[in-house]
Amino acid sequence: MASPSVLTPQSEDFPKWYQDIVAKAEMADNGPVRGTMVIRPYGYAIWERIQASIDERIKRTGAQNAYFPLFIPESYLSKESEHIEGFSPELAVVTHAGGEELAEPIVVRPTSETVIGEFMAKWIQSYRDLPLLLNQWANVVRWELRPRLFLRSSEFLWQEGHTAHASAEDASAYAMRIHLQVYNDFLEKVLAVPTFLGIKPPSERFAGATNTMTCEGMMRDGKALQMATSHELGQNFARAFDIYYQSEEGQAELCFTTSWGASTRLVGGLIMAHGDDNGLVLPPAVAPWVVVVIAVREDEEVLAACQQLNEVLSSQGLRTQIDDGRRGSFGRRVTDWEMKGVPLRIEVGPRDLAQGLVTVVRRDTGEKFPVALTEVVDLVESLVGQIQDDMYAAATAFRDERTKDVNSLDEAILTAQSGFARLAWDLVGENGEARLKAEAMTVRCLQRADGAIPDNELEEGLVAIIAKSY
Image (cartoon, rainbow, N blue to C red):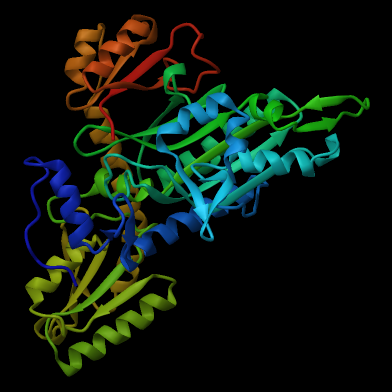
């Protein structure tokens, strides 16, 4: 298990604190090629739960999973000039294979709009084939100059959805459905992370998109993290890849397409949205283990009680783990489990056991409850939902405390040193965006005054959310 070494405090050096957690909670290691990562079993177990939760929601919207090649002919990307221009600095290109120079270079996929567009054109014939709703779980490569595990790596895991529709209205409605019913629902109910929902200004849109919607979460240092995005692509990719359908009137019509995605960056966001100076703090919905039953010391009666508790909790559908005391002192083991962020631990010692008691400890608040053995299962079951709700409430309160309405760009720049600033969009403008960029800040998204997602950046009365970001 992880070393009990103390973490660098968040207040002292937040990036170092993050790196410490990733290493000491046994989440990931740097890969042998710069910018790549090895996801360790505990980190991957968290990703598996993220993946399963998102996948279930995606399928509810009617999308089906498929798989497309890792290698994409360079000519495919060239068909959509804005797209290739947007990704050009990040592309990894294969020029030799099998000992020979390739006739056409091959791009290692940075995203799959182009290759999927090629096959959409092949599969779509008439209006009866629409909408075509596809999703794939895959890895992508975007050559990263400043890598950081989970947050920015040259290779990462993600899901990318791609759809084709008969009308702009249908495409827009579906992209919004994904954004609200998949991403926002998942972030709130599983990761317990509140976000600001809005659209990206034109300067921050996905390459080739006509509109990009985003979920922007606040991390514990007051910076923003883009958690998931949904893109309306208009007819840009349909035109480039000849994605036509025959209408009911027998006319050839161009499709409207969308794409949307979320990645292993969500693991980094989970760490930074909830973690503290003792390590990870995991919401029960995403924790690999919801409960760890800890033997205070190796003792026959204690171990028997731990085993019985574990069996009963498991039978109630809770993900549990036993710590039988073989991995060092009790204090060290408690430190290790705190580092891993397990939501609840049940400490079983001979003295308490003699009185028919155990101690239940919440990771998120540190509260301890001496509980009768006969009541512990009911208490744990009630605490699981309470912890999930309390963590979301705490993250929301933290975000709201660090978000301020301001009346000028100067005020926005001052506020965004350690939080989010809300400024009228018409007070920003192109010059304002350039000034923000010089201060290492950006407009993270645009919202209506009531927090709703606008149709476009030209609506009147929009508010810009301004922050530093990862």
